[in-house]
Image 1: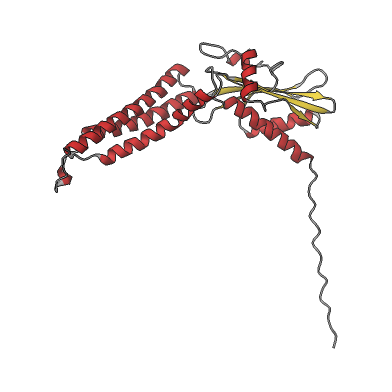
Image 2: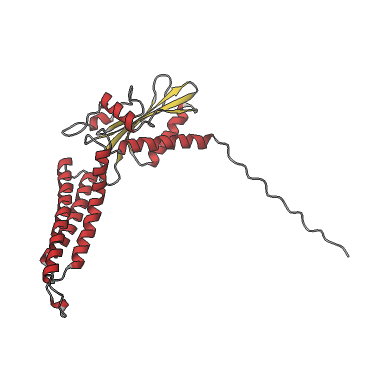
Length: 283
């Protein structure tokens, strides 16, 4: 039978399990922040950073278990500490919410990491190829037929951007959008027809952890118009959880919107009618 809370409730000791649950939750937050800093600023290799991150998630999970045990102990002996348990569970929910969402995405989305508008002749990683070397880094070579087929099934709207503007204009618009996104441009070449096409190579980051994902953009002439092809590929991991497809789709939409807005003539405001001065009546 559960023990009733006596009148001198404030004199009851605080449950040590409740304190441990809170401390583990706080430690998990600190570990998550440290792992994000390690990845974003490159203080350590990827494996130690991920080990720190997954260790933080394990601490959050352990905090939940300890918190449940503390709740049972409080219910049985009437000790204090419910506020610490609730705080720990709230922190654990915040820490585990986004990884849980990514886990769902991992089950739903295909295990690919290389997205392009042109699977037959994808834009190449030339300058970026030097950065895609080392242990655990994905190769600069396009992922191939399997990736192209999975992309066609899951992201059928990702296609070459066909524009009714000259090649140089299409390149300028695309370059402005890259600058607006604050991607780190590694190499670029303005169009020099007929010998060279326009090319931009840049590094983007995922929103929270800041994992590096490489982007290559090719702008070619197509008669009086132009074509823009985009490739975005994760530097690490076999599955990108949809981040590259989202990046390419958003850039496609922004390019089309920018071209449409630039081609529309400005709306002229009607002139403000000038009021005639009041007539002066002479007496």
